[in-house]
Image (tube, rainbow, N blue to C red; front, side, top):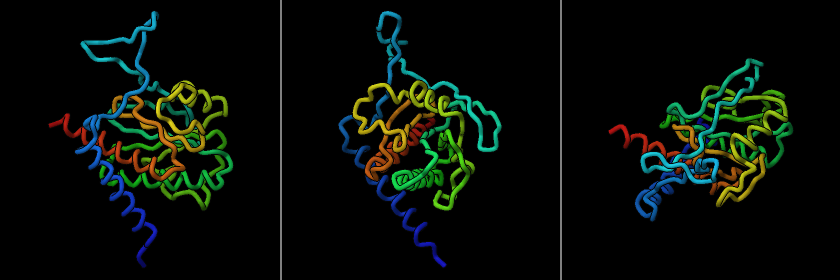
Length: 216
């Protein structure tokens, strides 16, 4: 029997972000360059420049546990594009919407295998029937820690407490963060809004396009 839900998800995943990507590529005034966040400053508050290029913040290594209790050190960049999200203890309506949107993002791994999804959880209670079957599998890992550890990572390492230009929400439950293959933060998204998810997916495609262009 044909799985119509999966077929519909695949169509939405491929077609809509592709249209957004095409628009950004050919019609955007910034020639589809994505923003870098948080330029590095020196002790005097002056932006640091190296060989004419502004230096930007890179997400440091985070230390958490897998759902089986193994301590891991997650290093960002290293050629992988990463999307980070959050899973609350009680996943209700908004949370389920967000997981559905992240499932759409995960489908991009069909063509972008170095795309990596990470969900942070401070109270992991195991896989539930309502969760996407891809959650906590290869390419979409769940990392756990204490409430204080997870909050520190979001506030400090992922800069959620910092004022973010153009960000529509600071709600942890709905926030997704895009980190490029060099470890730079390249976007913040409200995953309860399908248009924001379309934008995220289009911008992942742009990072993939840029990476391929750089290797030509």
